[in-house]
Length: 74
Image (cartoon, rainbow, N blue to C red; front, side, top):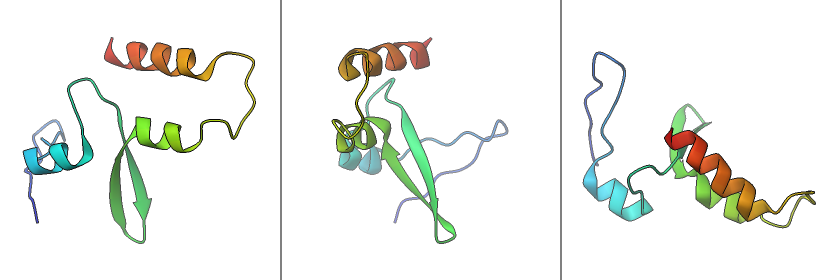
């Protein structure tokens, strides 16, 4: 089990072991899924990859994802 302290700005540092396990790197976007009174942390990329092809889009999905990630970094 890993722990993290919440800062005065309500921020936490994801422990190194968790980052490595999930493959989280600088500028990655993560999602917090609330489930059964707890929280599941996932990379947004994992969720998007899971659903590639399930919805027909007018734009190229990979281009949309790249644009989204670039906007999140700014």
